[in-house]
Length: 608
Ligand SMILES: Cc1cc2nc3c(=O)[nH]c(=O)nc-3n(C[C@H](O)[C@H](O)[C@H](O)COP(=O)(O)O)c2cc1C
Ligand code: SF4
Image (tube, rainbow, N blue to C red; front, top):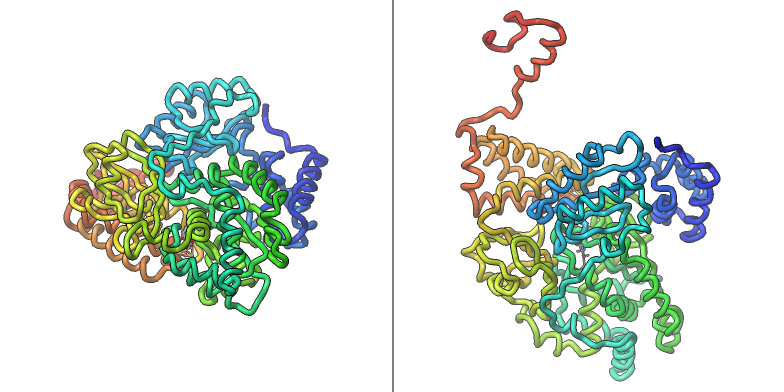
């Protein structure tokens, strides 16, 4: 059964449906492409031509956008497209064995489509299920906890050509493992409570929207996406821009490998997220809102649409929200398409505009000129939840938790070598040791706090605290026990950054590849002390010369492990002198074979 190109009427119908849903503005290009691809399985050239014509954009732009996002397919990816999550936690729990088993039974090479067009098997960067590693996506639908039995069941279903909708439903059940709940995960807030509280405060103080901004500032809410920027300052700066309308964006890209806490908030506490966005809209005077949801979370999308619809019916979105004339705001959900850099706020805004997710030059900041040149705030999912609670309970209540500099609580996504992976909500300031004890992590030798772009700490630092004044984190907390090789962990992260670099600026494009190659060279036993020094130099150069946070952080896992776990590198070194990575004479062997030469002139050195 070789795949036949789809019937032109099917292509036209898929494109029409996508256009009917998203409209014909060029800003909708990415959403139209994604949407048209769903029924077709891929985007044949005829679909691209139609989309380019209908949106009135050059075909080169359509192709450029296609090429940027890894979840848009220009060719048939198989009736079943299997994507193994490839975070370090997946590997720790056997993903490579599972991938090999599937490839062997289904007769397909990784990264290729089987000859009969039935299936392809590939890897994707972490898919947000590290608490259920190893995990995978089949045609975008997640399957957690893929042990050998599950892998075999998946093979049977594929070989039996069972339509995905008829696969056993339990395969797709993703459990949210809440291990410790604090104020966010236990608050009984009802839809509208925080908005009404904000409106009442605005009226009672006579300050209007400024009262909302003042409360967020007084709470000292620092952004939960990782960088810890002061939310109140960002919102106020946006609110002061003379241009309207303004825009509220929720960053639900959750791309940092090891993080999955936003998944829980979006599935179980969506009202709180939307409530936070709506109070933000009140504060900055915005009318338009977006949730940028990572493509891997497609399975959450429909549930979010339902919550939005209910909120519209209940007068919590739309015009005159909560009966307040002039308070108009609505939210649209845009899906990403498999690009880590799109989590970076300005790349995300580019992607929202239907373009490739290349980070912007700053200034201007997004608060001045963001989505379509409008003043825009971008905040993490958890930041909006915290904002809703601040408006409901007040800044003082919020500050009563956490430390003097880091108020409130933080959700941690705990995974790796521990008995109880899952979500833990703690007041900021909790020690790493306490998290390890609670999660049943025995024999931990290291923790990667904040994912690959965060910090890897060793046992002597387990008393350090999760707080903005000590260990900053967007939420990832990956535990490694004594059986793990931290060099291999760092090498995996080097591959991750080289793969995810968007290629826009030279230091990052070239630097991440060089770092990956050096780590591979050392892994192959061909490294030298000179290479370790080069890694350090390159990592520093990347930090200072890169255009965005991806390149800035790309060398961190290597610098951190080199500093703390140097023996893991040194025991692999072939020699202490310079070792070439490339065997020139070996590379000539094929040419010698082809030309039948074996004379001394065909060798670089002595004839063997
Ligand atoms: C490469 C890269 C990826 C990022 N990914 C995310 C992400 O998935 N989610 C997120 O909230 N912030 C992410 N950020 C940080 C955002 O740029 C931005 O700082 C954040 O969304 C602001 O929200 P906050 O102030 O509420 O933390 C990323 C940054 C970089 C450089
Ligand atoms: S630092 Fe890397 S990801 Fe960021 S713009 Fe440059 S190439 Fe792209």
